[in-house]
Image (cartoon, rainbow, N blue to C red; front, top):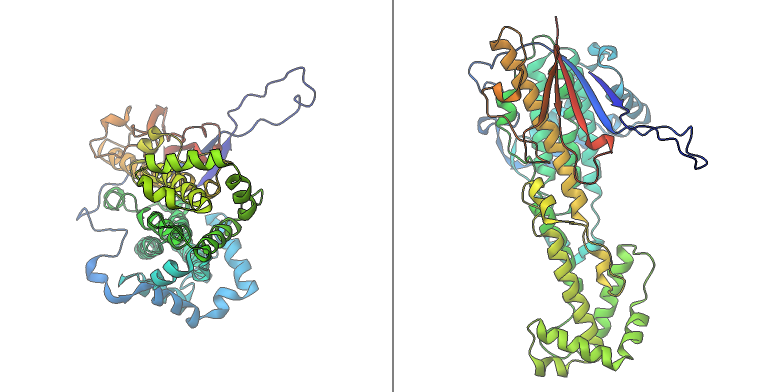
Length: 460
């Protein structure tokens, strides 16, 4: 597999000093694949990419992954072992020391295989999330990435050695592990889950180029889409903030002690998110409570939001300001998150899921920027959808005398649409090269990472 950045931008020379001689930016990523025609396996679902029910055992996968480190700490934490792993993860496939990589990871990665085939993933973290909120630490998530990186190296070794059945086993482990990471109720958990799934992409590009590689179109089709849901991450984010913003009462006047607790909670939130410029909540409140006309206007706004007029009049000014800020935050937060579980092209149609900060408010500075998180998910979805199309081309060629279709519509298979655009993938045939292209998210049309193109040729 050859991965190339194609420079599509044109260098514009103008009279402005410093422009001439600047390098054009790469705006497209080209991935060149040389593949062989391959029919669907018999039976057609001979290969699957997630553990099947008959492979599963009862137990908690998270505890199972933790045991990997007990099996071989040297393998994960030794400097020389990590340097080797980094080198093997990136070197050309043909240069991998195949014999040395047979059985790579030993008991530690066999334990990961076992954990990936347990039937539940209980992080045992919900109570801590509800009590500690944004101060919750998740060091165990980062350790899980070490297991995933090691599995990726094992997968590359199996691909290089053309041990296809073993490569499928490792792929199942990585995909199952990704879904288990997605059971962590946090944005960090989802990002780790997405990163683990992404580790399969390049080895898969290498796999489909190996002579004799079985066709995996139906195996890819059988995967859930998306592989990992964003729902728990969104819910976890809301839960983490409940204790802090819930300190502001919207039903009864608050005592001085209650107001003080709310002020401390707001300040902790801003400090925890490292909001810049730093905001002193007490100073912010002091300035605004001194403006009686402003406080009166905010009381009216609270009534318009559905609170009883006589109740709002009984609130001290500080409570009024904090409550108004909390409600404004909740409205902005929900507007940012409301459609993120929709297909990505519908998310884009809803508008910006990353709203700008409003400096007149306190908590607007911490409105969750899940739009970028959903974007990373769509990029991973797109990669696997493109690979599914590559496998469809291999299958078509096997049934049509070794020829690619002139148009993608000629492929008589249920092809995926582009998860980013919601439209069929771009396709054209140039001589013997089939060119597949994915769309970029809006505003990123000139960013190479988000402009993926496969140039697929048939090996002689």
